[in-house]
Image 1: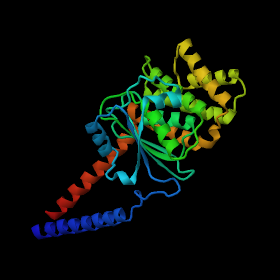
Image 2: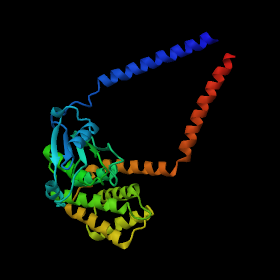
Image 3: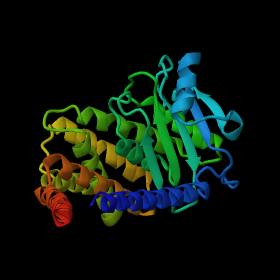
Length: 305
């Protein structure tokens, strides 16, 4: 019997070795680090208030091992003024790495230090960046200390600008207002980051479908979404939403161009909300799966004796 078990173990180890070898081969053929010559080097933007040690930490977090393989720039308080009419006395720590991609590949956001970006989620960044006109890029955000994460948006704008992107200043300002409103609403009683993101994303999806021509059309879309999502806002907060999206309407932002990406954000949020409330069917399926595995193991060893 021991010989039989030994053979089984050896076979398992052999099969595992084959699997690992296949993974290694696949990894060796991975082109994820290849530079797209159409867009040039990835751009890394560092917050100007980073100390030398903090900057080195950010480099490690953003996987910058060779400075010659990226374009490095610093985002300053002056950039806050330039891109979003921000406060010239601001301290900037959050940093970002931007790798532009081919049209249609989509926008992917990764917060490398989620514990240190305290107010802005990856979906919030994605929503704001799509409003600003940033599409088809991999964006990584990091900070060595706890920050709200708002200034990273300006760093991304600067990186995109340095990479040859053509962003509209009015759209950047509205995107910044959107991010500010999103983080403010997320602090309200009965709200959270995911609910706010779902609300903003679905409003944009409706704007893409309905193409509202007036402020009243915007108000109806917002009221319908607040009702369907069972979200209660104060009259003041509702008015802030109306003003924000009416500005977007006046800027003639074509959300049709990013409809699929808005759909991806909405689906991600719905999944997160389902996971948070608990999907009994899913967990029952997991339990049944492992039950079958344990039963198969028990049956196998029972057959040996």
